[in-house]
Length: 424
Image 1 (spheres, one colour):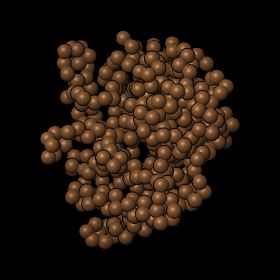
Image 2 (tube, rainbow, N blue to C red):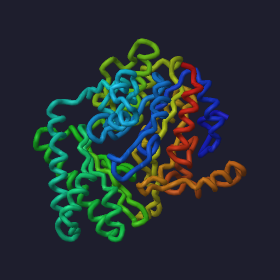
Image 3 (tube, rainbow, N blue to C red):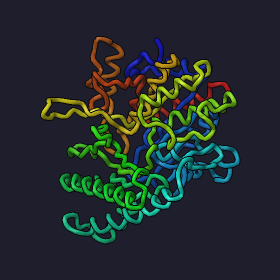
């Protein structure tokens, strides 16, 4: 069976054999929850050196695509450096993870050369001021009723929650969710206030003449509304719902990043940029159909690689409204994984979408029922849907081909084996 013909498959052996013998291969992979544990505080993240070394062996066939960042105190580069005894060795030998961060606007090669194509100085200057605004907002909020945290705890919480990323400053509420587990209504109130802060930042950008520069990304989310804005997933008390409130540059969406990466892949393997040397996320269309049409118009089908998209944030939430039951599908990885799937159909490249179960980390997420999925593998007559609740549904247009119930550790072992076998 083709890779794209599978759904929720646990047959990692078949996946490995097929990828290891693929003549052209491109892996586009998310980071948090995929190759690292999903944690409340990004400053506590670690990465296995063996995984980093495997990624280097796949140079030219592997790129990251993340809403986090490469640089800064909470960036991935610092985590990679900590995995080595001699940090300068990382840059000299090319151990940084290449690809796109900040949703697609922060480009890095494996030696750590970083650029922000298409981003203006005025936009960067506005973004630099966001963390200070967020710190003041949060410090005042948490010290006052109804939260009333003691002053020393407020400082620690603010330090944990406000992520001073250069191009994607973020409020990460994971720590506060756990601090307010016994007060779920207060946590939902906090989510509402965080969204209000994002609205205030958007109004401030408009006043500064940057009204069309930014958008707010919620992770995880419930897809987009009729106006194209992402829907917050308010906590139901069982999990945290939306935890990341990210103030991001327009165009910094992962599906656009797929084409940016593909453009660089073609240059590395053919010597030319099908979309031009300076093509970037800010200059690309944001509509999925337009992105697919752009790819079909410019990429040579004979050179199209098999693309493997790897993510952990995909949601499908049932909601009962005036019109009856409807599914709200979202997740920050859904868009780019769907484009990977659609490119495989359009180019006949048999692409594969991999889902990593990150629910065992410190952040509450929907998880796979591995026992049920194994039963489905043994008895194809069984319906898989009880095993993927809140992740997918029978009408979901995104087909998750292979799943890793064992989380990032199971995936990392697979990745390292693939890297060892794939021809240099």
